[in-house]
Picture 1 (cartoon, one colour):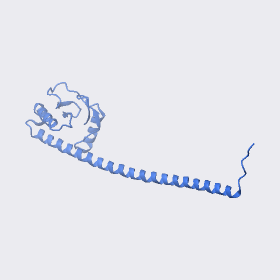
Picture 2 (picture 1 turned 90 degrees about the vertical axis):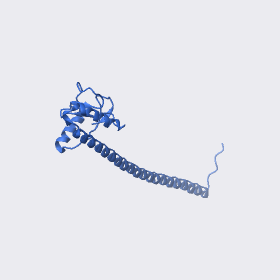
Picture 3 (picture 1 turned 45 degrees about the horizontal axis):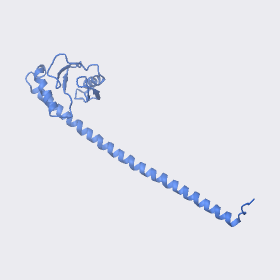
Picture 4 (picture 1 turned 60 degrees about the vertical axis):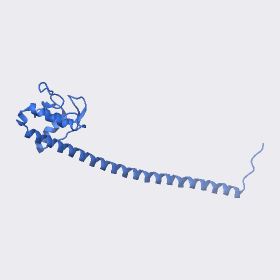
Length: 167
């Protein structure tokens, strides 16, 4: 049986130093990887925060433009003959408002109970649905009672169009 020759003290020292160098390189590489990962993570978090800030500004501008458009629609309704009492005159105003804004799927006028009075979706003014039971309309009522101001609510599935919309 051939047994390996016993290692000399110098040879064992060289193996120990080599193993120590390998362990040290692996530890340093591990530290480098963790440090690099932390730097990349910090940069990505900063980019995400910047993107979120830009998105917030963009949405603010979008909703401000929608608010301005709705205010112009309100002015047009107030200038129309009979104002809110003339639903036949309001329906074409709602349709024209929607026609010039492709991102809008539906414009409508309701009473304070949520009953549709006029809609850009149909010229028929009888038998229109009610949204009084929807949480978004209840939130609008609460907001209106508190502030008497224009309110843009949460997205909801429209009863007339079947599409998601803001109320």
